[in-house]
Picture: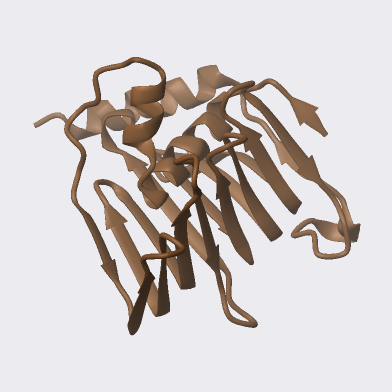
Amino acid sequence: MTSNRPSLFTSLLACTLLCFGFTANAQQAQGNTPAEEPDTLILSDTLNYDDAKKESTFTGNVVMTRGQMTLNSDVLVMREDAEGFQYGTATADKGKLVFIRQETPEKFEVVEARGLRAEYDGKTETIEMIGQAIVTKFVCGKAFDTISGERVKYNQSTSVYQAFGGPNSAARGGRVRSLATPSAKADAAAAACQQKSKP
């Protein structure tokens, strides 16, 4: 399944770029003036940094917080190649999933992504949730858009996402499952939330 529908997966991409700390590079590459970057806090049981490989490995109950984004995994590896392209991989132990949550309070939106592994490739500008992958957008606490499969992949430069079935799919029968709610309903839910939040 391939689509150019950007809403859910643009949010997922922004979320993943933030969690791996690559937003500033993306803005500079596009010639934009970068906004002030939020602090990144990473908690883990151990940290190993290899200067020769330009690689940081965080292990053990990893919790990364960056602005409104939180990532939970068991291992997080971040590295940079000789050309300056950056890469990140987050993995979970057996029986667990990598979890990414990005809040956008002004829109009353939350995007949650789950998978056995999350990967970012700075050279190809793609992110991928791999193994039992599920990505869901919530508006005002209600799920609106959801896609599940074995892999969910998004390309930043082309705004194309792909979802693939397989034996390790989060959907039944190894298929891809996509539920898209009309944007008018999401807008109405956000407006109702905004109305409730007024003093």
